[in-house]
Amino acid sequence: MIQNYLQASFGYTDFQIEQIRYTVVSLLSEISKLFIMGIFFTMTHQFPQYLTAIIVLLALRTCTGGLHFKHYSSCLLVSFVIFYLGICQLPSITLPRPAYFIFLLVCVIANYLFAPVVSSYRPIPNGIQVRKSRRQAFTMITVYAMIMFIVPFNQYTVTGFWIIQLQSLQLIAAKILKRRSVS
View 1 (tube, rainbow, N blue to C red):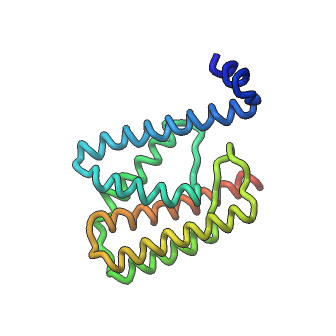
View 2 (cartoon, one colour):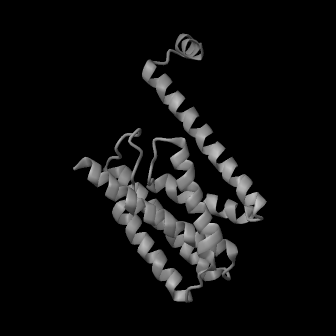
View 3 (cartoon, rainbow, N blue to C red):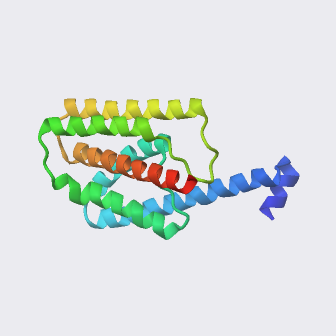
């Protein structure tokens, strides 16, 4: 019914309708996962750290991509594990101050070498898009390192640090899995 309306009123092709459907389903899926995880982090009194983690992860993941799953439940589970580790577990590990910056440098290199890894439902990025993605990741992680250098360490900066580490690790894993599936 909606498809017929869009085609009759706006002249959309079947392909364009499928793109719209994919976008709407993807947005609703992501929003529902964020909401479900938000309930957990609200109940555990870590919602502000969760918001920090979302901002950092979305900023980095939108340009670098990463692991993509075909099923909602597996995506939710992996997303939850990443947020849980980055918010609840890893921040309890105290590193010497210089180690944070060394690890962020490693993330810059990893993101430069492996980004972007896009979903199989999206077109393969061309050279310009790849360079843009790598520049954005470089800029974001470098700015984050500067923030960590300037702002006194706190639960929010440390949470963001661990989310960058986890995003970079899953980006490497995604690149390895993608290479294996191609060969």
